[in-house]
Image 1: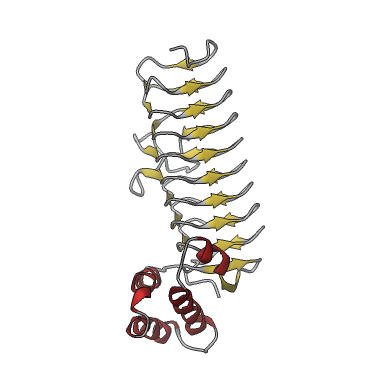
Image 2: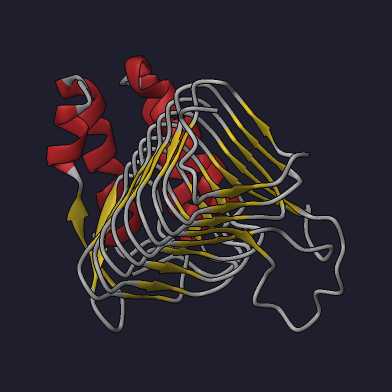
Length: 262
């Protein structure tokens, strides 16, 4: 208990590992579970059916696990699940899910959330994501691994953001963003391939060449989306090392329900 500040209010039913640190004037509700090595800064509220994994750093003035900002929410016991080693900076709001979806808002591992980030109900986030200041996700948004979202960017509800993509500063995202692409603007437009990010992650020249070819097939050759998908599937014949990347793109395009960013 020496790691919990004397002014913090931690419900006796909450489950905190003995190594968890809780700062001054923070409130932790009865249905909260926090794993080893995690720290909660001062003046935070952690409530709802919220599970926080290991080695997370949650800075001051955050609201974690509040009910959704959805008028249909009627008190159902929905959840927020946060993985391991995430950094959550000041003034972020992460809400629980709703009964209209899976009932769970889920955040993966090793993500970096800067100040004033909002994660709405039922969002599903992967790992190694960076969201800059004031980036906002509407309800039911899905974000793949290794995505970077620029500051002041708004993503409408139910959008899908593909892995390894990058969204530029102050963008309005009203369509699905395919994997590997750089997009920005209002209206949203594809600017190219996230080459810097792929190289940093150790993509081989062959894999990068395949990704660049996918970009050409989608955006530079005047193909319909259906024809582009067929051509993308054939890339594996010449570049078998990019099979996983091709499968990622094919799977994404097959489930893109909001149209893709052009």
